[in-house]
Amino acid sequence: MIRYGFIRTKDEIKFLILTCMTYLPFPVSYDAIVDICTWCDDGFGYFELSEAFSELQHSNHVEKIENNGEELFAITKKGRETATAFQNRLPYTVREAAELSALRVIRKIRRDAQVSVTTEQNGETDFVVQMTMQDVFSIRMNVVSLQQAAFLEQNFKKHAEEMYQQLLSTLTHNYEQ
Image (cartoon, rainbow, N blue to C red; front, side):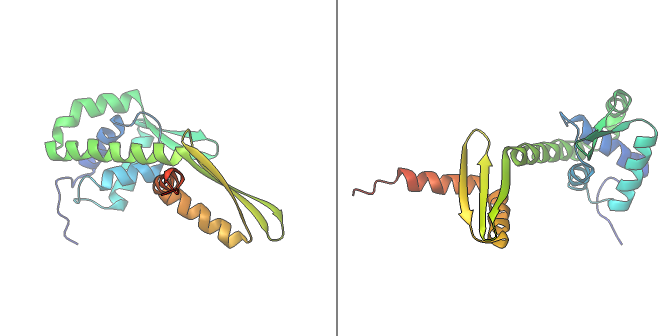
């Protein structure tokens, strides 16, 4: 398969991974790293990225951190020094794309951390769904089935901001006119 992009060799992929990780202020999941890196360049695929990432772990450029049963990854001091030393090996457009991609993923991670949903079962057909957007609003709704609860959870996680705007608009509407 023909790939179009600047990054082709395993070393270039490693430099890209390290460059992307220098923009991350906190450890992230492997999926987040894949998301950041694959958005930057089309010259490599998932398997090449995966192999390069594994080698960076073995060489102690990247460390794995366990956090509440979740595997997160962070760049080490050695990795940061390597990224700084070799960042000019990556084309400027790729470095710029890496920064933008990292910022995009950071925004998504922070946003997802602020949105939470829990479902509590009170009876066979009595469920309470608590939907919260931290420091903005929270709403509890009673529903009659687990399917309804799951549907609310999924929609709220994807569209919390839109729901907030709709709710605010509805609540501030002048119904007296």
